Image (cartoon, rainbow over all chains, first blue to last red):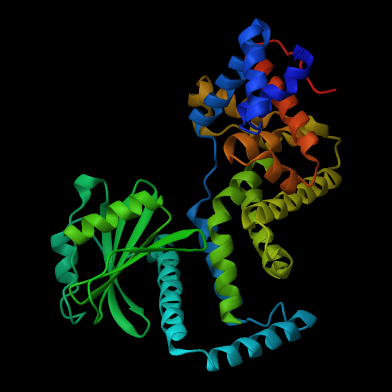
Length: 250
Length: 175
């Protein structure tokens, strides 16, 4: 391999875009050629430097509110964009097919559809919880403030564990109605990420956390002592599992 | 129909940060970037039927990029004085309170160096180095061949190396 051939491939090597054979032949050339090795080192350090500089611009809360308001508007007037479109007819036809399919579906299917609906509702509430002005009803990082707040508001006493030493900081709590069931939502924060925990009474045997994904978010669901638990966040799956394990241990 | 809105929200909301970041890097000011993200989400919502099966992040970023480019072209056309590339950078050169303090920091040097790249080079650097997209994904967002992604990226990096001191521009460019 000549330096001229190697030049553009240095970038592909750096970006992990080469297959094994390509990567090996570049590496061989780099071990031979001082000039290319120096260039590769320079590219690597540029890459590292950009990563370390953390140059992503984060959107402000105002933009999140604007978009949320826009979505809310779409929900209120669902025909706004669709009324004149032929797609409209297609969507209704598809909806009719789905409706027929659901009517004749077996009960097992209904159960799973039920939990999916709940998952979607919970994610919905979690997304709302991300709105800065609507995060919690009782903002407090003190479990002894949050826990008593639910008294008289819910028929049960939700667990509000203090997980601060594990880097899940309590943000507060609020009431949520999930699937026509009043439940407690306890909100935690890990770094920039919000983790919402939903607790509501539900008959059923204890189960271990089960993972599902929805729209880029992770949800863990489990049963414990006659309560249904949902944890939802955009943190890494491993972080969410850690969170669930901490909550289960109380 | 409500589920339609909801499923759109669920699919697209997670890409809001990436959308904003790309828009912000392309138009180089906060206010216009926000408008572009909002317009892009609206466009995406109207066109959601066309995205079935595609990678939602790539799809969203492509809309943001095109919206931002349309905006920049319009900006150029509206401007009576001939600004050219220098003038486009005016927004980023505006003094900001933090800027004075950070002026000398290395982080700010890196930011400035990327910001001063021509848009063609800037967008590949942002998509690759900041958003971490693969060549294939970048090619989809920008609607250009992979080979062009590679040559632009190589050229952009070499320009940054020169700008940030250290290396001379290296001769290993693609032709």
